[in-house]
Image (cartoon, rainbow, N blue to C red):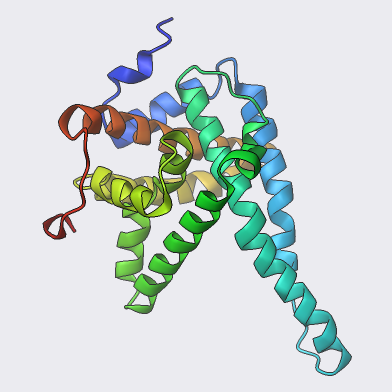
Length: 233
């Protein structure tokens, strides 16, 4: 098997899901499965910190620390795990070693860039959603590769935002429809219960990692020094 098979990938929806499905069952399957389980477990406290029963008085004193914890956990801890999870899948798509320590590597090597990049993307998407939803969807699609660029290319937050915007120029609809397809894949996973949900998450991560790599192949050939221009929005 060609260990650099990924270098011949070209951007397509079907190709991304097909290659992603095939590669996730290669040697790294167990690592990817465990990574999805760990990330899912660690994502649990995020929702817990936001639960409220509407009571006032002493209930508010309990709720406030939970909300603060939920915010801190969401923006200071989970981005590192989520960015690491996406990078782990990219490594697997490239036939490179998919070590579970990548889930936590960001705490040691890239913490500030990860946190800031996540905040910037979150803020831009929320601003877009306030502007009648559709701009938020567009921004989310165009910035989908920010986590991978921070981890894979070690870019600073704003550079990652610029590069993702440049990379997805002409590919926004691919990202959008892959997102729509991912929803149905997840629903199918729910029908198959626990194992199906895990496989659906694995497939979705694998497909988007594949799309990133395929666009990167093209982008590195045609635009080795990406610059975001106002006419590219």
